[in-house]
Length: 490
Image 1 (cartoon, rainbow, N blue to C red):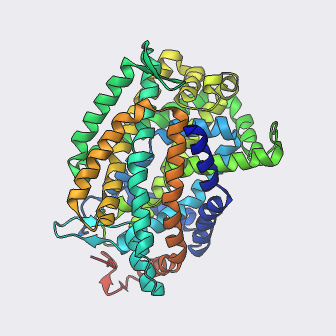
Image 2: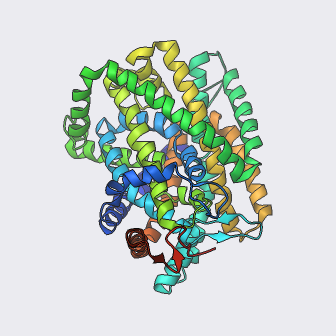
Image 3: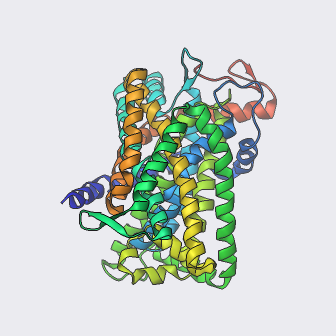
């Protein structure tokens, strides 16, 4: 009954209107910014590793990016991709890729606006994100009172953090992979199909305690952990994936052909071509948004804490997150699944036919590593990926809570304990429930943010023109020297 209700709600919120809003916003911003995510990608990658001298903020731009990546590179890159492929077909990877290319413009705009409208609090920290650029940007440009829309975003952000993407999906992925590796006997069963082992309980306790110890330290401690873990885990995972793909290089052309043709409903069986097309695009876009969070409104909360005086510069750094997360990491997972033979194999195995960590484990095992090594690699990858996502999303959700309750730190402290408790209960929920809940709250969180981005696309275009005009002429920008540039709100 619960699963059926969640599926019904999921089908409503992830209907045509939201897909049009996500893709449409990205296309509008791509057009207004003249394809900047493509022509300025090289500059963005250079900015990513080059700190800005004399800038104000809590953490370096790279630290803010790593915090954002810690929240995006998680179970979505491993479990989410496999679920998209198994449920939506290989064509879902095509739409995930397209959504990422368009989403880079969205992510740029989010990062730019976050710095432009951020606030400095009495303690010296910075708070910014969709709630502020929705409230202040829309009022400044149109004279409308949009504070209610900012509050709505913050409310959904709090719920999404503790009730979906930030907690239960992440630790559920860690527990599933760890259970698969150690293969402990079942202690008891929850519901019809959720088996609980001693491994499940150990993972719940250990991850919850470790997360609580880091979360108490705030953004600086989260960033310091992320700067070490995120680059290491991303590079290691991509390298292992590339080795497997090159080992099966003869399968790559056929895999790419299947991904492209099935994106448009070719080779459809049940439901016809349109049904296959619709399923591919919905699962591809949904899992893409879950993974890279472009348009979701989460990453700009971290961007607002970056040590920068230049909104456009930080926007460029922010958009590299989508490039790294989806175009690099997610596509590696998808190609490993397709070239290893795991996709065809898992279709015939009932417990793997709807995706999950087991599919990716099977792909790495069949691709080259063998069962034990494949399970070990995915277990380690999920442990690192998902743990840092838990940390990053706590920061996002706490900032939403701070805005929602008008700066009340008492409310934030209460929310922190709710968040930690949600981490603990995540392993005891079923895979389908976890991902459906996360999809629903992602959609609800994204809608207010996307509306704000559409209304403020002119502000972003104006800032981009001023910034690059100043760089070309060596002149001034809003009264500030080209380096450093001025910030709209301090």
